[in-house]
Length: 382
Image (cartoon, rainbow, N blue to C red; front, top):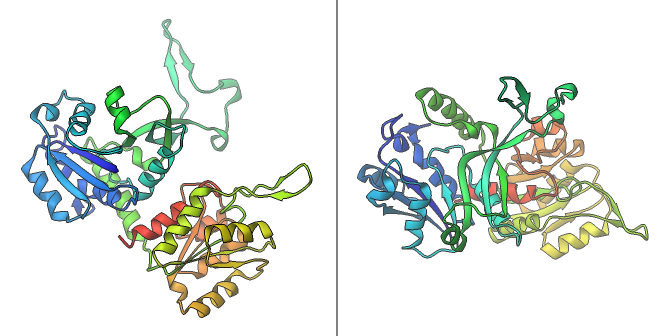
C-alpha cells in the first residue's frame, strides 16, 4: 500500500497558523491534499498534526482518502526532525511505500506525485525526490579571498539554452519504502532519482511577500487549466508515443521505441470508459502491432488531415469535439490540438504547437508524456 504522509505543526514563527492560512481561496494544506487525492498511486493520505484547529479544517475538506492522526509532542517541537515524525508513524501504521509531502508546497500536482511513484517502481530505484532545475552560475570564495566559478568555465561561458544547470530540492515530496525508511532512518536512500517540477515551485513560503507570489501562480494555474469532460483520448505516434527516433536493425529493419508507462496510461483511460486512439500520418505495421498489444480502440494510419479523421471518429461514436483530448508534438498536430476540447503537447514539441496547446506536459515524447496527460484527464474525474 502506498501512503502520503503530511506532517503539520500548529505553530509557525514566520506566519501564524501558516498551514491553514487562505491561499487562492482555500487553506494552504488543501492544495497538497488535493494533489495527493488526485494521484491514483496513493491509497491513503495521513495528515499528522498536533492542532485541533488544523484537524477540524482538514476534516471539513471531506477528501475520501484522508485520515487525520495525532502527532506526539516530541515530534512537533522546533528541533524535532521530520524523520522523527515519519519513524513514529511507521511504528504505528502498515504501508509499503511512503510519500512525505510538505504542506507548504501548494504548486504540487497529482501528476508530479504519480511520476514519482512510477519512478520508484523501477528495480534500480530506492527513493525519489522532487527538484527544480536552476540555470545559475555559481561562485565561491577561496581562502585567499578571490572568487572562483563552481559550475562553468568563464572563458567558455555557455548559452543559457545549452546550459544544463543544476538540480535543487524544492521540498515538495520525497518517496521511499517503509523498509528503507526504518533501516536508514532517512527519507532518502542511496539509489535516488529525481522528478523535476516547475521553476516557481521552488519559492519558499517564509514571508508574506512570498505568499503573494506563489498565490498568483496557483490562481493562474487553477483559472486557466479548464478540462472538459473527456470521452475520447487520441494520440499522435512519432515524437509523442515514441521519442521520434528512427532505429534500424543490422538487416535494415525499422524499429520504434515505445514507453511502457504510456501503454498503461491508455489502458487506465479505457478502464474509465474513455475511448482511446492513435492517429498518425505514417503507414506502419509496428504502430498497428503496438496498438493491438495495448488494446487501443481506434488506429488510423496514413492520415493526412487529422481534423477530418477526428471528426469522423466523433460521428462514429456520437461524441462532441469538445469532449475529445488530443496529444501531439509537431506542426501536423497543430490543427487537431486547436480543434479538440483539450489540446495537449509534449514539452519538446515545436514552439507553435506549445503556444496552441491547453496543456504542455513536463515529460518529453516517448518518456511517459501520454501517461502524464492521461493522469491529468483522469484526475479531473476524481
